[in-house]
Image (cartoon, rainbow, N blue to C red; front, side, top):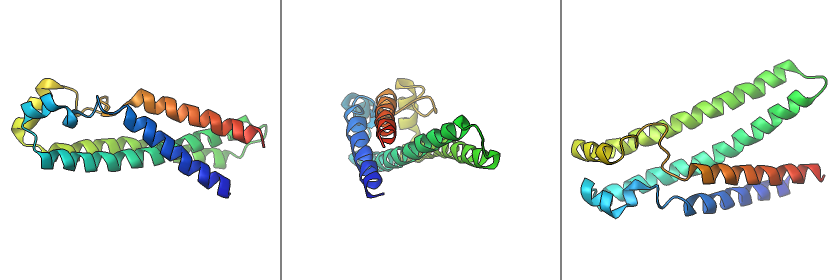
Length: 162
């Protein structure tokens, strides 16, 4: 059990390093040209950083839980004899985590939007029309997904070697 906990901590640390290394180009509030056009204050920029950093930490934790539950669901479905109630329970957890991830993304973007005045929002939407949509990722989505897949593969190998 201690090894799993340590692995989880290392997993999150590696994701944080990989994820944050790929974010600099995507964090629009750190782009000097864009912040000048928006007249974004240092206070606003720091507040967005705090909101986004909290979101990323929560995203990594929830993504790990989602990955674990997806793996558990697949393992349950591979069994010859399955407990349908258990399968449905795990599927409900997966659905709930996906919903939570979407709502957290939405909440983060709405919170950031409230920090901006109408002129800043208008300018930002002119520069980056989709910035507040759910499709717009403020971080390196693909880098994050690759890191999660790599860590998932490493965890699977570790489980198979037991």
